Image (cartoon, rainbow, N blue to C red; front, side, top):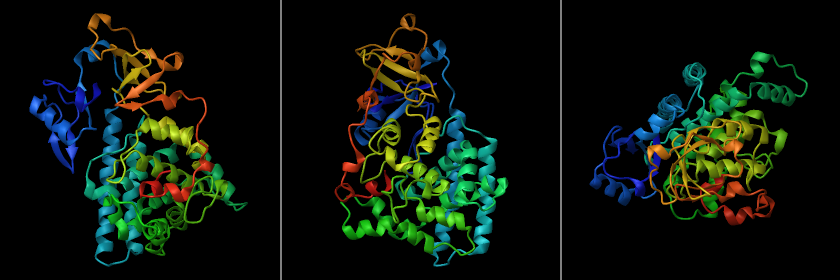
Length: 415
């Protein structure tokens, strides 16, 4: 299995274990032995890039968790959903409204994708990142769809109980209450209202008050673009996908359990993908940072805590092969995930305090960090991980002035 290094750590002769893509073009293929000029080019063009390179010594010494299946499933689902979303965009760009026949065809396609997900269960949700600036909205919709369906499948009983509760005494058959198709349709269409104002994804300058208001209205605009034949629950998902658990969302400020369970699921999937994805107006935050903020940090009140716990088990903060500096100064490499304690993976100490590779005879068996609370994580890819060592959140979200922080599109999609 590969280890993950920053471009500054690359050396000639290292072998790429995963291809490097930009705008759907393969810059460097998997298996390529890096040359010095290629490394210099990567450092100059993509200084924040991380790459996966092979480490035959570690591969011989320890058995890494194999997440290649999870990568394939996530990529396959996203590509399928991007094709579906493109067909929707093409129809709308031709000034032709969606109708009932379109919905029937989409439902059939979505059923096939849902069946694929069910038949290819993933240990961890690995979201697709193609680096294609021209298809950001489509890629985002694909990731939100995939993560929402994984969450929905993981909390089937919770979905059933919440749908029965929200029915307020009306009888719901089990098959209907646990049907995730309306959630899938809602995920497909959730950002439909952003299509007329998609230019904001490429805007680096702060948005005007009028721009911000247009974005805050996109759930309602998207709702108006949907055909009357679409399932009512799917329409509700589109309308409420930016409503927060604590009532700070938009457009209506609905709170807590007044929100449908599907709305709470897509809200979390939407925020996670937005927070961890690069945009021209804001650098992505790490998975570790976003997961901490959503579960323990300043944004925790925005989300249903039950669903956040499920998210923590599905999306791991540190990928297999992540090279993390410890408080001892040494570096550990992630060998296996820990679904119960995601911030405490299993690691192997592989680099010394000077970031020099340990010799094979100095390597020791992997360490389960969940059983060693005294070991603290300090840095991953130049990010300070001290926030993971806090006992309490230092920031009260109620003290934040929403008018002050909502200066760009990122602030309207995350938290």
